[in-house]
Image (cartoon, rainbow, N blue to C red):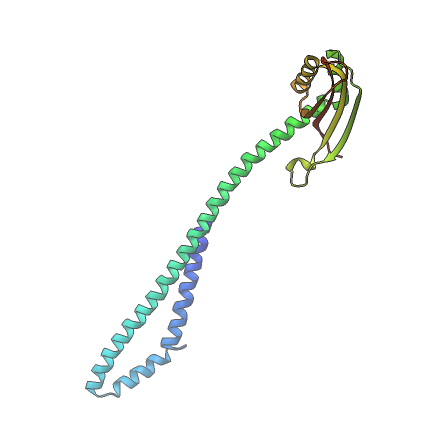
Length: 218
């Protein structure tokens, strides 16, 4: 309602300003134009008075028409402006609702990642799975990198890139190891797998695994 009241006040002020200016121009500051017009009218002959009256009426009608035209034109302009303002308000309201929904989803994602990080650490996790599956890890390296700045998670989290080698491992054991890694590793995901045959055997291979996870930034 405050927007409507503002526009009502704006229209009223413009109306008063317009009528005041027209009154001064037509009647004079102290109505001196009326006195001058009356004196001039009574000095005329009867035919001239009639012609002056007709001319005055025509002039008055023209002035009123111009005045009303200006008023309604200004009113229409204000109405269009008011409609644009309301459209903008509706759009802002719609965007606010969308932002709140997306922000809720983002906060849920942050909470999910943070909860996973609280229970899973990459090196101990891989070593635990390897022991459970009877797999020997020949090497394991970790590297932390910052997330791109355009990623909304970059303020709170960073990436952990893990690379490990499993030498002389069978395909069933390798697959079982990978399944267990992703099944309970929270944010840990396998990104790349390279398998190389070993000389002299067709049952065992050397595997190079790359995985990714997240850690708290800082």
